[in-house]
Length: 431
Image 1 (cartoon, rainbow, N blue to C red):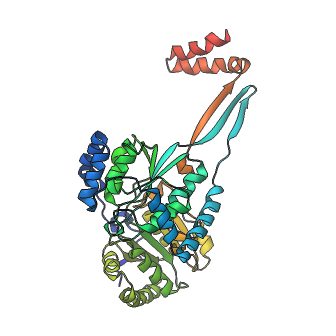
Image 2 (cartoon, rainbow, N blue to C red):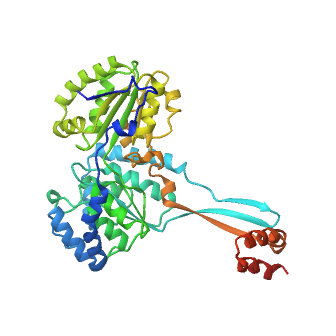
Image 3 (cartoon, helix red, strand yellow):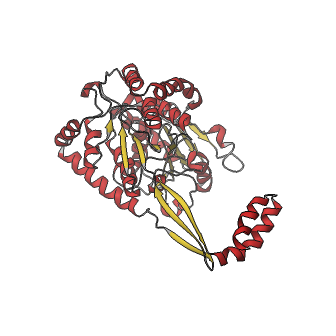
């Protein structure tokens, strides 16, 4: 049974939300100090430092960091046909959605003889991180690689932690997904050392321009440490779900989705927001049954007993305020007229509308991206997309007559800012 936070008596239905809503504690700042020497060692000693960190943290002695082509081919050949078919369909749907995001260059005439063109240029090389902790994530290969390919990134490298049970290579399903997508540069490296390898470059792995993909707190810390030296998508934290539901929701569906999110990680956060105490009671009863039967019961129970809760609110307007404040990575809307309610949501990584759009669909086959902002960062940040791999570059073209026409304005602004040389650089052209 989820603990309850009753906000129905609050004057505005929300109270001090930041103080009362649960979320897993993730001390990235402390982790930065733990990974700082690892990253510095990789910067200074290169591949040798990566191999030593891998032996220390993963218990795998690597002779080569890069996964051989034979291992990729073998994983592809051995892939279960049902998994292959699912990955092929996931790739198709994800590519379809992300191709619609690709921006065209646009030229704007700001005056006669003066134009600004916005060119959308992909980064040259990216390092894509695929986690490999409790479970394998071939779906994360799809979510990272497809938007990078659609953006037109020239050089893609994937890193995923080595697994002792697979001969020191990443999980075969991850390798097979890489092979299906035509990615042949894959490294058996995880954690902070993988981010440092990508950020600084080592023998056999040139430095990248951008690192993307989710990982544990040490991966997030390494991203924070190297940000600026290399681009990053975000500092991903533990996964989370919020479900905004009323008494039209099926308690079995709600419970199933909370359990599904909780099985990711003991630090997963699960929030049910509802004005219906009857629904909350029904969900508790369903949770008792479903948790007892789930495969990963121990981690599910830890997540549900930790940073998870049912929040009782006065009405759906108050529920929307709670959802927007919490800014969940995943938000399900299970209400009457769910589409209209979902359209009012401001803050969420992704929104799942109605009883037949569970987060599990988004994890695999909706076509949307599942690399999403966590920890409330959906208030200001979106998920991974084609735009993550593109830069807008303004190209300015101006004739002599057009520069002459605007020169008095430049003279006025340059004088106001006491930047006489700026004015002179124009006047020398138009005298």
